[in-house]
Image 1 (cartoon, one colour):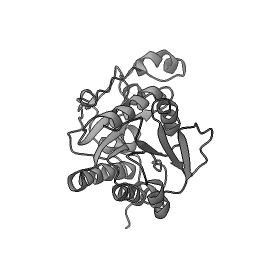
Image 2 (tube, one colour):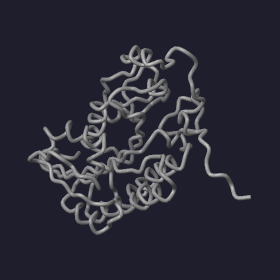
Image 3 (cartoon, one colour):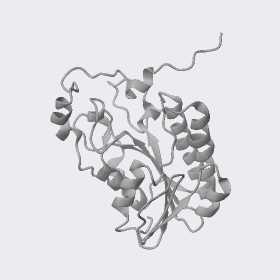
Image 4 (cartoon, one colour):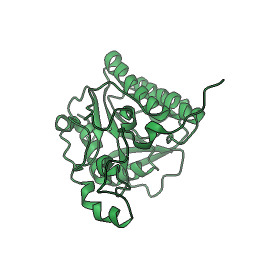
Length: 270
């Protein structure tokens, strides 16, 4: 278990939407929060310190990791970026961050993976974290890489970790698919906190959703973590219906990854 009163936690991507939610939800209990992002991090509390750095700056990563017990790695390039950016941030940067953590003696890593790590499974199949990965995009491929790297760091270096296959993180659900995949701000805080406080998660993969009525996965490892989501996308069905979203018809996408699984990619060379 990571002790919120004595252990320093480093949160990457702290200026992003999930990072903001984590700061708001954790700062009251966690006494030593170190925050990093390439963008400014405003309104620091007394128990927060900020390090502005690029994930490609390996010496900066090694410096910021000093004295850190747990890493919450939320930095990532979104799926719409090209291969070069995805590789720089979500592959090379990911390795540099994890390796800096190892060299500094970090004991726990919580990683923002994605449900796009299994997005090519048919929606009728209730996927569990025990299923083999079936990424639906290069973005998903690099998330699987992160999960695999954490298995290596567990087996070789005894670093405990939780990879969170985060679904649709928004303040409110946004479409039909998010009625199954929504993760609310207060639920993401609870999920990360449970991942930090668990006495021994081993090398765990867990789904990152709220308690949605229309959830399409099974055995998400929530009981093991002690995660009890409190929000449900179904509470916002009328809002979506009023926006013209079809919440009553057949499921729109045939795979768990939604549109990702069928997006056109660069054509093969002739």
